[in-house]
Image (cartoon, rainbow, N blue to C red):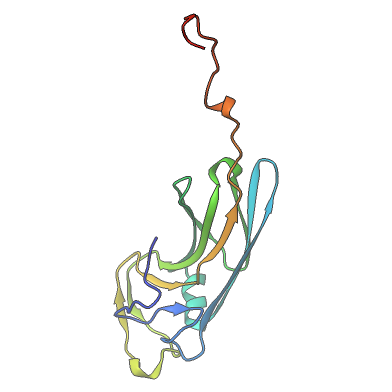
Length: 167
């Protein structure tokens, strides 16, 4: 999913480098372990904002991880728990650049979106949010994986010509 890093929203959005909250932010990191068959993405996430933690606890906000690989057209979304989490992908679905990002989205209509930590410009404003609104996101993390080596015999079949005029 492509979203503008500098985009503005009509409501406060929690980010790693947040401007909409006084102190709240998302912390997100990812590493991987590769086996012969799978790549295990080991995710660490943390939300430093009390209202968001309450919304998450009440199942009003969900954490979604996005894994995107342009070379293989993989675009996978998976709901995760905040904290430590592992997402596995078959190695056959991964080649070249892979981008991983955390999103926070609401799983229901929120009529009273509010936090004491909103930046002072919001002046205790409450917001009405439609289901599926982006309420937070992390910076993108990229990995580069080797393209599989393909031998010509995997693409072509060599056949001896039966035409004597062909050398």
